Length: 160
Image (cartoon, rainbow, N blue to C red; front, top):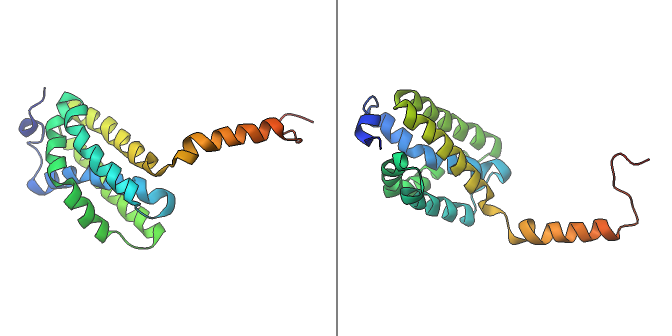
């Protein structure tokens, strides 16, 4: 396992804080991309996921996520207040913060950086899907399949 102090030794304190905020920015980006808002479900899922990552992530990242978890909820609420209200502006602003965090991976142990990239991508996807309802996952596909089956129209793209 990579020792966290050694892995981050090239980072200044401000850079380390920016890197520790990166999962927060990923969660905010995932929440804002679709509708420009952070739902309570998205927030709760992000907070829960940050905690779960302290013991479910790769061993090389557990210490990192332990540091993230200690501050995640507070930082989430604080950073959310800094996000512009206009949807287009909020996405651009959050993407810039994510890019800043991503750029710091060049200063981190290369093996850890690869693990972090994969983990952050997974973090984003998990929060992005947090606001999907039961209806979207289960009822809608069943309902759509029934409509297709009983429809008098042919929806095949290739059909003449």
